[in-house]
Length: 134
Image (cartoon, rainbow, N blue to C red; front, side, top):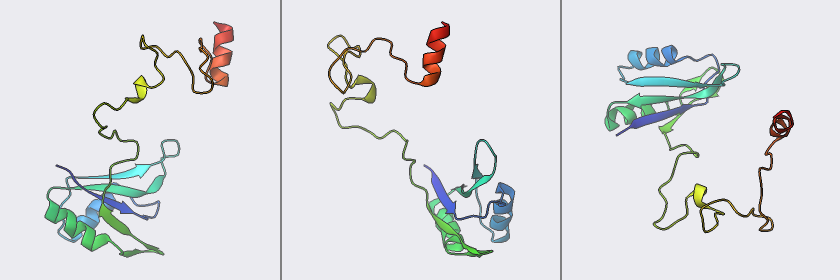
């Protein structure tokens, strides 16, 4: 079971090592610390996830860092929530996304606009240009 703390409203200069040092200074334990960064610029997005080994340790981290001042910011710490893109269990009999708009043979036979059959229609300008070359 995961005991993950969301640590938000961090200044962009904060690193995982900084957070580990803060935890150690408070005698708090974390299995891992991950500062979330922009994939292109590698700049911090201003939040991190701290994996605690126990629920008690998770609560201690939250109590210590929630509403703590850092520079001109007030930190936020709370139990992490599943990401919005995470798969959710569906109700029995519910159609999975890959099954929607399927004809009797299981192939995509109709689009959502008018029931017309779509044959190899490019999905983007890049795909259109690539189709011309091929």
